[in-house]
Length: 392
Image 1: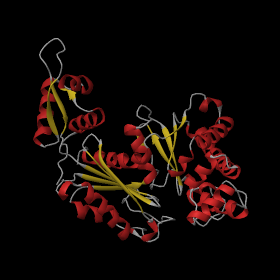
Image 2 (image 1 turned 90 degrees about the vertical axis):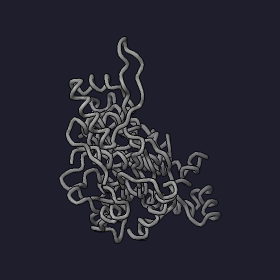
Image 3 (image 1 turned 45 degrees about the vertical axis):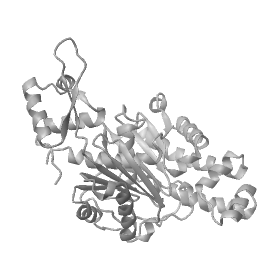
Image 4 (image 1 turned 30 degrees about the horizontal axis):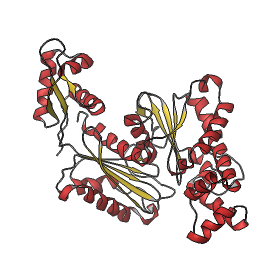
């Protein structure tokens, strides 16, 4: 069983060292405001719990050199980011540095047993000889997750996952704590920990992939709502008579510009002759994806450029309302469809800056994620390490 801190002081020390790396005892004393004797007591206890270790001596500050402490180097966390069409798995140390990362195509519609088995295979490949001890596992799934019992609840694109005991299944497999959350929330945690939002307490992370969701961070914490469904912006209606969505309603944002919707529109443009580029790609591959639209748009294909602009306008309209309501300090755009790049970003920015209140947008950066497909991995390990580094 993974050791846990015994009191809030120890928990705070662990989280500081996880975020900032090794620090001297003198620096920790200044930050925590603990007396030297109290700090020594807590650090000694954390060392005996195998959660901290010594890192030598710090440079002299004019007197006796202070000892350096760091999160124990043997700690290992696993992050599993399950998307609609892929699985990403990462292994990190206690400071959440990614030590290994593997991914593979997968279809979440194959059901939890098949998908989790694939995830376990990837984790097995990351563990050296299968002997690396795992101290916690965080996992993100592309659907609503109950905040009460951490299980998927009626996920529209995940048949067979409703109330499936993901947490219990993986906990039995690894013999360590496991936490489950929505994939967009773990991406937001990744940005908070080591992305563009490190110094921002209130921000929105919009993931545009097969579906569309929004991670909401308030005062440095994920806001999940009462039951865990906050941020499901993909099912905000943008038109009364729009296309049918996977949720059963019509005109949802996701039905206009999720990855599946973009693939649908790309095929239509190819088959109608509106896009010679996509028609040629369809003939070669037999299928089209959002990545094909990005390539077509980059080559100047008029139909693809139009799709990107229309999609960006729809996202921007929804986001403009969110910005006026929430007044975030930063908006980050991530996910597979965000690979459409700056053409998409420019359209989103244009709509948001035009339609939101000037007071809300005057100093509001809207940027593309720089973490890419590691955001979910880092966020998942942040989720579980928050749990392990807290008082039981």
